[in-house]
Image (cartoon, rainbow over all chains, first blue to last red; front, side):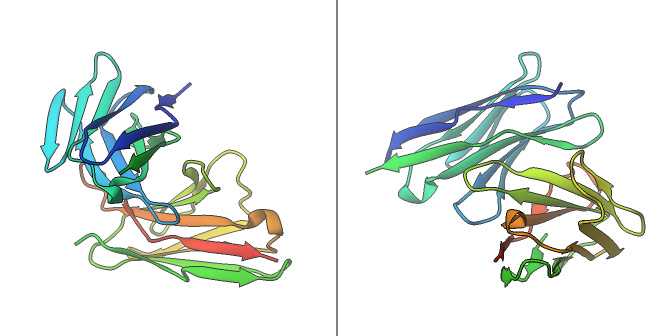
Length: 109
Length: 116
């Protein structure tokens, strides 16, 4: 079966760095997405990785290792507004998105 | 660019009535649209995938006759919840893709449905 695993909840301090991991087992691979979702709102796109390596976009970076079925989202200089759920999703061979359950990130002052 | 709108944002209806939710891609043509529902503190659950001009593909366990999906044009898809019941109360979110790589899904703002 297809499976996406990510921690249920993480806590970090304002100004610090946090890494959210995602491991996956899917039927084929056509890219991995990270989305941010604030409570009561729809997800917003953060990043896309299809090749191995690190993609940096401002305070957010995303890493992919296809051989390990592993990705992480790195958030630097954390701000209170970063408190949200972070969803990892993998596009399988049918170009269907397989979603993880999301990681709720709590930022403390 | 790549803006998706959804209407209404909130709706309250009585049990037994039907509710229609619209999803529009405002500045691009969406070859494929997706409908999700999300329960509190849970991840997105894909309900169906719709391609313009063809019948929607429903996920296992989703009742086709209860959740009617129409993708009438490249910019509009509708979800109609028929004979709604309180257990249908949920957050419904649509997304759309252009059909070109990287096939990113652009999400609408969601519709909060409450059935009383």
